[in-house]
Length: 154
Image (tube, rainbow, N blue to C red; front, top):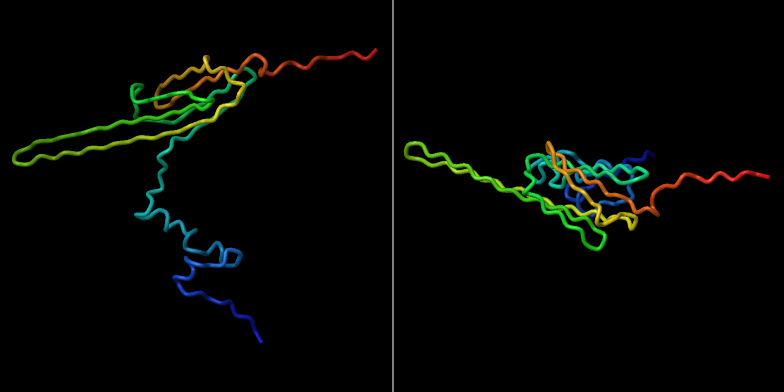
C-alpha cells in the first residue's frame, strides 16, 4: 500500500483550503507572486516609506515623498498623533491640428504616527528637501537619557 497526496479541485485551492495543510499552504494561488503583480495590484505602495532614528536628545523621522512641493503637505498634531498628508494634481494639454490631447494625474497619501508622551509638542520641526520630508521631534527634559550616576563603595 502506498500513500498518494490528495489533490484538490482548482477552485478549492483558493477557496476553502485547509489553512493547516502545511504541505500545500505555500503553494496556494493566494501566495503566488503572479497573482499580486497582475492587473489586480501593480506592486506599488501609495504610502511613503518612513525611517525613524532615536538619539538621546530627539527622534529623527525621514519620509520619502518625491515629486511634491512644500505647499502640497498638510501636517497637523492632535492628541499625540502626528498626521501627515499630501495631495497634488497635474494637467497637461496639447493642441495640434484638429485634435486635443489632455492628460491628468492625481496623487495623495495620508500617514499618522502615534508619538510617545516624551515628545515636546511645541518643538516639532519639519523640513522638505530633495524629495525627503524630515521631522525633528525633541524629547522632554525628563525623557532624555541621563548619564548613570556612579556610586562609590565605602
